[in-house]
Length: 342
Ligand SMILES: Cc1cc2nc3c(=O)[nH]c(=O)nc-3n(C[C@H](O)[C@H](O)[C@H](O)COP(=O)(O)O)c2cc1C
Ligand SMILES: O=C(O)C(=O)c1ccccc1
Image (cartoon, rainbow, N blue to C red):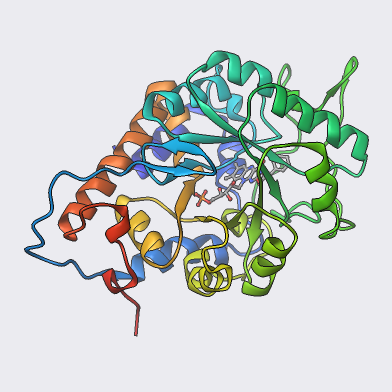
């Protein structure tokens, strides 16, 4: 089943307002479409008769082994798709040897996600909260749950303007952002434009987890992230949900990879739908990619087995594409494999 079949199944099963939230985009959806279109425009140039054997798509990222260079991107509110929510996604991640980046806006608390999927490698995504004491307690919970990296999202100084998400604002009865529990209540997530690079030092002091900066679109910002001690970067436009008309992520990737120069791992998300997209991103300088919406559609369409199928299909497709390209492994992927559009 392709991701579009999953989406159709999700549309049949879910509340239309929740489908619209998952699918949602900023502005006119120019960046949303650009992400996928940019992958489609790139062409692969396979090598033949390379005498390659059985290949291995496994690798290590920030000390974490992963079966493939494909992670679960952080997405909010998995219980809108399935009653088990993030528990189901984490079990599927464990079953497929995939690193899952759990959103701070998860509808299952990070400790409960970890407890439900003991074999999973979890990273935790954070929106820094203006109440830095509260931020510290959220980070502390992620660390106590055994999360292996902190992914700090920096492309949301304010909430994205999503004209077309048809009025979805409040979670249904019984669903909450469990990581924001504070005493008897749940605090709202606050977005703030007031944060600066100096906040990285504050986070560094809050945790021993490696810190990854998510939402970089420029080489100079990537360099600043490295200079301020980031341990990794995610080239991301938030799946077209924040500022419309920013470029497709795979278009800005080569310049960012060059600026980072191998100092830290560079990840990319946005529009990754097929194993061939993974090859293209790695050829243009990414160490790994993350997928957002396809995981949500798989979860809505088929629960935990649905997510397992999405993740294992991506890995199978990657293996197939690499074999077809004459690669013996991930290290064989270079820029020569991709022909850029004229
Ligand atoms: C429904 C939805 C919720 C999201 N929630 C978050 C979030 O809580 N934190 C975050 O950093 N990114 C969030 N994102 C962005 C994803 O991490 C990722 O950047 C994006 O989905 C990648 O694009 P793709 O959906 O085309 O794969 C969300 C994306 C979607 C579609
Ligand atoms: O919807 C999103 O893209 C997102 O990042 C988010 C932010 C805060 C709460 C829920 C989701």
